[in-house]
Length: 240
Length: 254
Image 1 (cartoon, helix red, strand yellow):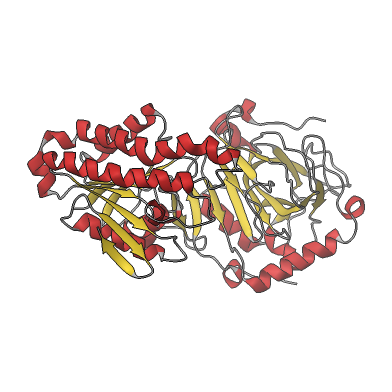
Image 2 (image 1 turned 90 degrees about the horizontal axis):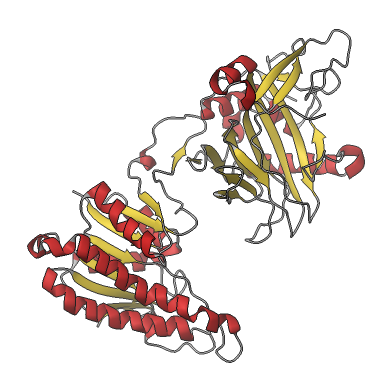
């Protein structure tokens, strides 16, 4: 049986690649804000213009859900429609991002974005995790352990490193806060049998490959660790 | 020149069928690079004839220059009004169509205004006696008026059809970036915001069945020119009336 995965930021680089790589292994609830992920879903499928009919590529559609995660009602709807459709949630991957880079000294846009960046990287996962726990995970901790249920935050190498001149101050600070939130969530969610970890890749695709980040997500979901940050960089991966 | 069969020139065999805001098809890298180059070359040759001469100004509500395909069109662009392309689009959309086809080249100068939201469920008139050897009846402004049906040559037998499938194929456009404009935006209803917007990337296309709900419009192009081939297949009027009623058909103003 496929694991049920709620994936935020599904239309981003990582989200879309994860859907393409693993729609055959997970029932993916692909949460997007404006643009549906460019993968097969209930909203779209591929056709052969010369031979309209069944194509194997359409065999594992994701379930695409539009939502503005900064809206409380949309957060509740994501959980509601997921449970209505699949009856359970086995893993949540919070990959939604809205980075704004700029100089603290010269960028009004950076200062203006601070609240939104902090909200998406810290407040939203906190709210969504609380909702998932209340609506499903708090029902049966033994069931959670049996299914190896987990939560994965997509953090960044910039949470622990200053990359000079990149204007990443608020992005990095909010990712650092996300790492701390991850460890606190792991501590509290151990009581209900749910593991919580984060992945902190360097820039992808570029310094590291998107494929390596996806492999890291699988490592965290398949494993038994909790409260860990999986760093992915030029030198390889490191769990801390 | 006999137009090629679609199988000979198609590059992408994987097109997207999307369901919102209404069923439509989008594809990129539609044709092989060689055939695309031929299409673009033909387009440019017509464009070189001069905007006001080769591309008369469009009518109100659509800020474009329009070059209607002549019924005897030859060369690479004739592919779009070929039997093979007609049958491919009809099968793809699953729509029962007639053999009547209208097509044109559209050119937007930079800064062209937004179009109005419309659905393309309009009449199109054809001379029933003018079908080609392949059975395709190509619209001819010399034989009858496309919008109102007045015969323009002795012996013409105007017959009214209704647009059934619309296609827009983008070509001759500079690489597109977010913010450049020129997209074809799709809407759930007239008062809504765009649900999808299809960028005018060269060698890509958009196709959809014309229904009372196929709302779309051209979005202003801010960065550069925006060129395309537009095409409509048609259905019998009685089929459209049976499905949606007389009042759903949007007649042309004079």
